[in-house]
Length: 158
Image (cartoon, rainbow, N blue to C red; front, side, top):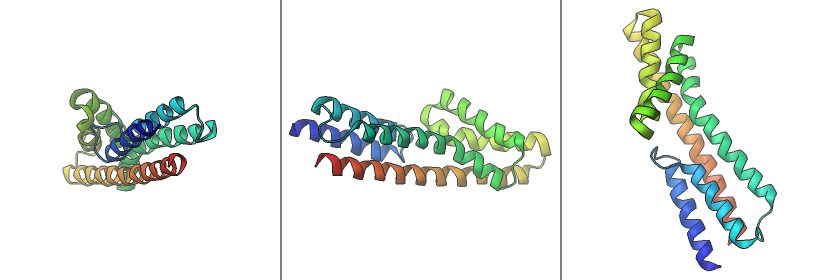
């Protein structure tokens, strides 16, 4: 079973890195590692309750990832148009630029949405900076969740 532990910890470490690197599916990868280990060990080291906990953390990380830029936009005075722009920009960004689009898309979308409504470039850029702030806060929260998941996994299998 040592090889299974090594593979699981390796997957979890890559997932931990992925919580801050947009191209790696972070916490989702960690969840896959947790299920992988449970499958190969017959869930001897942790219960299905732990799997549900890990699933909750995984889903919550997506809520944070997509919601943080919207919250940052709103906090800096963004209108509904800039918030919708951040959402639309995130979707278009992911589709056209891949994971990097998760960062660039919401910022550009928020700026364009606010520029469309207010016509004020300076205000639009300020709101774009709010979106960046939200993305940084969201990434920080995702990293904290990933660390919690990683530590609990290590406690369960080591």
